Amino acid sequence: MKCPYCGFNESKVIDSRPADENSSIRRRRECLSCSNRFTTYETVESLPVVVVKKDGSRQSFERGKVLSGMIRACEKRPVPVAKLEKIAADIEKELQSSMEREISTEIIGERVMEHLRAIDQVAYVRFASVYRQFQDIDSFMEELSKLLAERNQR
Image (cartoon, rainbow, N blue to C red; front, side):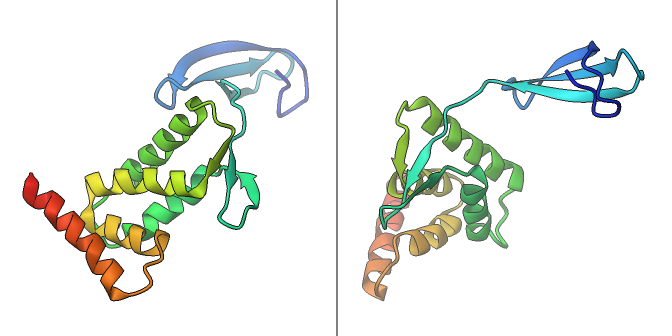
């Protein structure tokens, strides 16, 4: 591992421990030349997931976009950001393990809505109203009616 301070190519590992819920390893290193210490993270290389948008264009999956959409939906709601970060990470893991290299925005949106429905119904309705692009009050009320019927069955 190249030292970020002097550029020397050898270092020794001082400490090693799991990080990010055991999905990576954090290593504390010491340069054998200048003795400065630095931290590295080792993770499994993953294949990129390509998102197919509604207009047919393609772009790389970005967990940050999923997270920002959920944060907007949960604005002024009692939902911790840490919980939303975990949901975004879970969705990314799910997409990675699906073995599909191209995923439509519809599939991603549906997965986000499933998670939001379970943690905060107001956030779910906010996200659904943007994601599903309700054209009129009737389609919005139809979605609310489904949500109320579901809640009353519990």
